[in-house]
Structure formats: C-alpha cells, structure tokens
Image 1 (cartoon, helix red, strand yellow):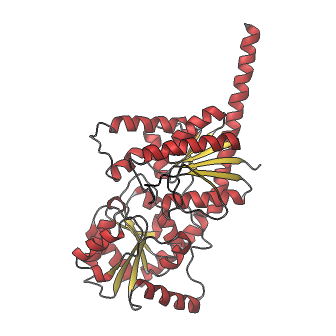
Image 2 (cartoon, rainbow, N blue to C red; image 1 turned 90 degrees about the vertical axis):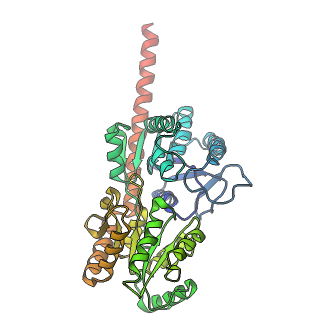
Image 3 (spheres, helix red, strand yellow; image 1 turned 30 degrees about the vertical axis):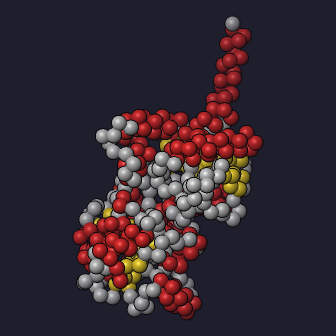
Length: 417
C-alpha cells in the first residue's frame, strides 16, 4: 500500500555529503516503490530532480551550506518548524520521517498534532556530533541539558532507524530506546552507478581529461578521499600520513575531495611540504562522484567519530577500490574482512597500511573483489527501501492498534460511568 510521507531534514539539502546522500537515495528508492514523499528543509541547498522540496523562509545572510553544529540553526530550525507545520496540515501525511535530532524534535510536535507515527532516521548522537564539531565539551554547562533533550527526542519516536548496528548497540546499552522500536538500515549505495569502469577505452580518455582538469600528472598512482574536510573526519591525520608516505612512494598522489575550507587544507599541506603531491579541488557534485573516485588506486576513510555512520565506505567498495580506514566499530561493520585497518588516530599506521596495499597487488586485488561483492549483496538501496517500507507498515499498524484500543477504552469508561 503506498503511503504519503512528510520527510523533515534540518539541513541545507542538497549539499553533496554523506547525510544528504542518505536522504536523497532513501527518498528516490521509496518513490520507486510508489510512495509519495514531500521533503521540508532549510532555505538553501540544491534542488534535486524528481523531488517535492518545500523550503523554509529565505535567510539572506546565510547562503553557504550549514554543516554540523551552528548557532544559526536555532532560528533556521524555527523557520523549518513553521514550514513543516504548514506542509503537514495541507498534506495530512500517513507518517513523518525525520532526519537528525532537530528534525525528530519538530516531528514529535507534529506527531501529537496530527496523530500519526514518527520514524526517526538516527545518524549519530547529537551531543557527540556537537563535541566532534567543537561546539560543546563534556564539561560545558550545556552538556547535561542537551544530553537530556537528546534522550527525550529518542524516546518520542515510534521507530528509531539507525544507519549502523554499532549505533543501535550504543542506544541499547544506554537504554535510550526500547528494543522493539529500534531498527537498523545500513548506509547503502547505488551499485549501478558506483561501479568500476566497464569500457577501458572510453575510461582512458575520460581519465586523461579529469587528471588534466585537476592538474595531476598521468603517471601518478592516486589515493582518493571524498567527504567532509574536518579534524573529526581525520583530514588532518590524512595529510600527516601523506607526509610520511610520499617520500617512500615517489609516484604517489593524494586526491582529497570535499569541503568546507579546502583552501585551509591546501595551506596545511603546503606547510607539511607536500603541496605539490596533494590536490584539494573542493566540492565534487554527487552526480560526478563515481568518475572522480574511479581515478583512485586506493581509497581512504580516516573518520574519527565513534557514533556516526560512514557512507563513503560503501561508495568506495562499490567502485571496487581497496579501502584503508581507521579501526572503528562502524568501519568493521561495513567492511568486515574487505578492508585494511589502521590504529585509530595514528597517522604513522595509516601511512603504513596505505603502503601495504599499494605495494602488494595481490592484497589490493583481493580487497577490490571482496569490497565490490559485499557492496552489491549487502548494501543496495533497493534492499534498504524494502526494509524502510516494513518499518513504516509496523509503526502504522501499532499506531492504529493504540488509537482503536484507546477509543474502545474511552467508550467503555463512558458507559460504566
């Protein structure tokens, strides 16, 4: 049965990074199953084809994409709340699908007003994200109130849908969400688009064009990274690992793609003496991401966060790239034995593990094959959409049961009185 769904995304959708990719791919996959989705989001961001996007009021002094925690979000979320309310009253959705804790807080209010269930797409801890972004510390006076608010938001959802089993396990250990309301839908990948090039002649010509555009010599082997640039993403450690590795492998080049502040990281690479061997082109459009990733011989995922997902790893695997990553529960969950793991936070070990893959063709080939196979069999968005559809059906059935049971109880009380 097709549903009408209000999806709430308190972010500058679309902006070519992991959280937005999950929203975009989920929405497309659910639409392909016949469901109607309307997305409310901030005033800024790119429109995407085939999506019904309703944006909040324009804020002329905020044009750049909002990434992570920011004081601007206080009034941006207020504007989004009003837009979501107006859309919800007109749409009368069957259910609300909210991303991020701010979206789930807005959704919790609308849930009570409309008497429809709320599915919370949980992509990491609110307080942990604020700490990762330097917006909060565990000793801050705001830490306890925000942590308490996070717990309340988690409890208001009819279903909490995590992007990793690791996140679900953390919520269970914290007793933050009742087990029957907890579900996992892994960050997935469009395996038809993210795949190794299948036409060597055409790819050779495109590769030369892309390398020329980026200013990278054709005879270089390339380590690729695509994602946000930030200390908690491991960007600083990646450049420090490059500084250690490049003297050992003179034909190597690092292509570090993403934003914000690529100029700042170019300056940091120059300060490390590796500016001519590291290219930071800035934002890469998601529609072009597979072509740029195909330039790589090895992909790297040095994310430091222990609570957030890491959707870039699924994309790397689908491309048939050997993946080197820091050893975190999320990385292990996604890659299993299809990856190479460095000690968390060690630039030295990250450099050593990259060197191991680059210098061992048999190992690289095994990782390529295992990663691609795992991506196709375990992490397709088609599979994920059916999982989400099942969650929708469950929360709708539970809500109807509660409402009908409540109605019978009230009628019985009236007669008895």
